Image (cartoon, rainbow, N blue to C red; front, side, top):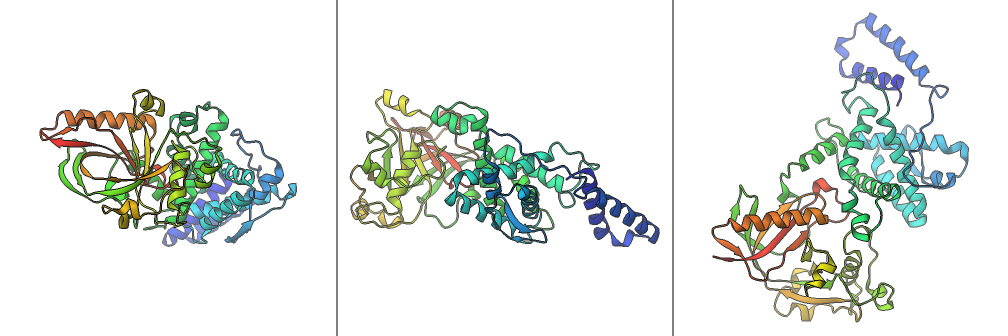
Length: 451
């Protein structure tokens, strides 16, 4: 949005918000300004939005395939357009901007659902077009940081530029850094292409988050999300981030160390399906392929392990039985590289919790058995007493190592409990891959005994 359009929107919003302050003379004056600025905002004066280069090179047809074709007055009626005409490029970009702005403001036309549906449709039919679709949205957001505005602190209720800047701030805190994404887990260089890929993934997660939010008290949706993202830095209300409707191991809190920020829990027994994160089964092995589920977030550490466990739980097992999803995902020897664990004669493992009807003593025998060659095995965890430290955001290697050291240091000063001999640090991640960092719940824990 340019200065003229920004001021036009601001004046119109002001006139609607404060009708009692309008005099006849002021009305006439403001109307004249609005008409003048509307003329300045006409197509003859508007410079097309230029796509920011984030290491993605796509054809015009791919870009246009991703653009949403919507009536400007009713954004929710938009559908994915597969047109490849160059003449439609600017028009599609404008329609996409309208959909985005309605989603960021109050989503009155359910535009966020349209954006998410378009993205999912493109991912199924043409993944490269889906990447282009995300890049087009990012280019719209990127222009906001370079635009001039007459009222820098204008509310997101009145200013489209303010809404786009708010979205840009949320993306900044949502985009994983190199040590949280591909470069950390796959030894890839942290180049511009990888950075752009992480930014687009963060955008996809944010679009889903916007689609789940609703405006409250007149606050715009993007402003609500920005407040939540900022609040995450304070690590408040972590317990409230536990996903609804998913089974999780049961425990009683034995002691709370409120000032230190950790607690002692006594867990009841439960069962898990487990896979070693360094498997002897090769990635292209036919048996492994049969048991792996498609992994939506390949930047997750241990993606192949995650896929094997998800495949087992969702029906790729001896009985072809799909089971309910549970939480959390558990990783033993957290904070260690697979190679480091192996060199110490140990293993790094990932586990999913089985549904509660398999938590009794014969549960692992009654549960659907893993397919041969999957690398998945079933085992029972006897529970016990654990010291647990909660934290939010991304559970990347550096963060887990820091939290592990923090917990162990705190335990050294505990007067009642001590770390059990040979105990391993376990990382628990409670949220699905599409949960933004400011809503994520993670824990590091270790078995303890009374002094």
